Length: 164
Image 1 (cartoon, rainbow, N blue to C red):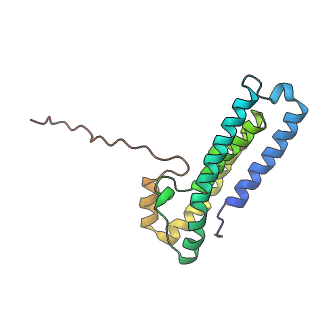
Image 2 (cartoon, one colour; image 1 turned 135 degrees about the vertical axis):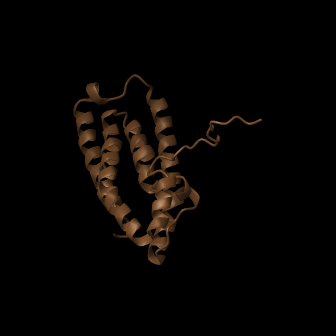
Image 3 (cartoon, helix red, strand yellow; image 1 turned 60 degrees about the vertical axis):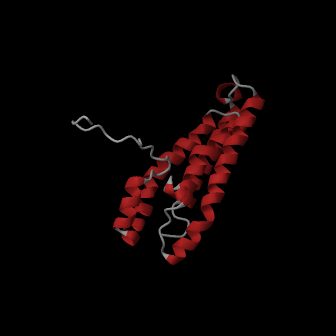
């Protein structure tokens, strides 16, 4: 496993999708352009999504390089909510933001391709992390979502007995 994990493969799949869907959108704007929402509203939404994505990416990109060299598992900061925040930033925020910036609903396919590529490719990275960190990684993996945070209820489950 390299320091960048599956990142290059994931971004390559998304870049090809962006290029193809952008060409189709340019050739058939009447079909693929989002025209039922104003361009300025789409631009604001796009900038917000891209901004959040860049913030997530930047907050998570420096630590893994150092940890990889030291063979440390990162479970703090944004990594306490999302196991793969860099991939999450592209799939959930930056790619949809770019699609909205170009006013193309078809370009949203890049997020879908990114997600399915992620699901296919991440197995290699998870196997490496399991080999390297063993049960520690498996425990972390059970607590923290891949690209979506796991929402857990803070309420205690009801038992069959009533409190008196």
